[in-house]
Length: 215
Image (cartoon, rainbow, N blue to C red; front, side):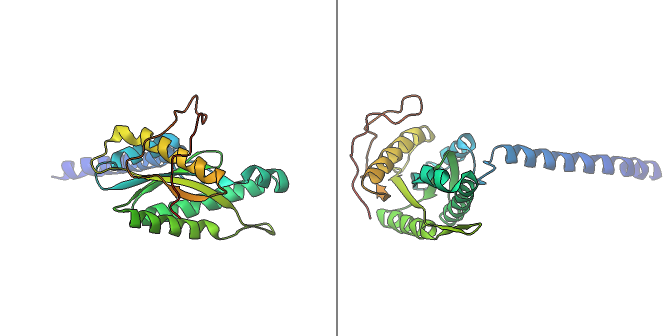
């Protein structure tokens, strides 16, 4: 019995060390998949998580960017621009979590989210809440900025499959562009909407205004 106890006593610290190492490695891997500035998932892990949620519960997919972000960088410098991205990331993460979703930074000042959404009324409420979150000023080193945004959102049809995420994101991106062309804010795609354009090398091309305003 004593030999068994001695053997266990020798093994437990090693096992505990490996367990701690495993936890640290997982944290490092997760950190590498998050955007260091906004704290959100980068594109690939965001899309992985968004795909898993499709088909489980009714969802809506949103794409948004910040209005006049280049002018902010040019006028106040990149440190202020970085602060705007960081604040936007925190607000978007808080909003998407509240609505049972996930958010990511696609690159630059462009973001995406997938949230739980059972009806057009739910969608409207969610987007009005997001607008309220983003409407608050951003304060950084004596600067107080009101940053606008343009967003497009589309409801996934019941039973949507994971493979449909790319279509939903294209459609949301198109509606976002229409909102930006109209002066900003958010728009929702009509029910059963399909994208009227295809992306070419990640660039928007051939967009047509097929959405209707939901605000």
